[in-house]
Image (cartoon, rainbow, N blue to C red; front, side, top):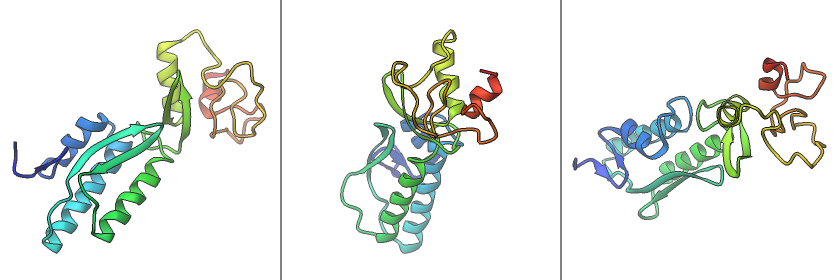
Length: 170
């Protein structure tokens, strides 16, 4: 083990250690968290303080979670972590597009309509109603009337569809 491996983050290879926790999503959450810890490393080196020990990095209930071994005393680090989490919780885990938390096949996740369609379509290509409860009528102006994706509607489409359904011609 390297001397720079502090908890789950190896400060000599931040990208690899973050991807080990979150998967290979350089444009999504793994990219955001890699940038975060690179900034933390630079700040700690400049201030000549110890790197914070990270216990866990994960997605839980559609939100990014970063757990530290102890309370992070440095205010700048705390603010950067919080800002990254806030940004991640409104962006796609995989590609970084704007996203909202969805229930996808029983799991709570944060995926844009494109990545959510890709995931569910690969598992259930025969379905069009991919998200939400089919028995419950769509009442929200931000819910796709075809697939049920919440939070991303193509404003140029008069049928209230998400961009992925418009492209598919559903």
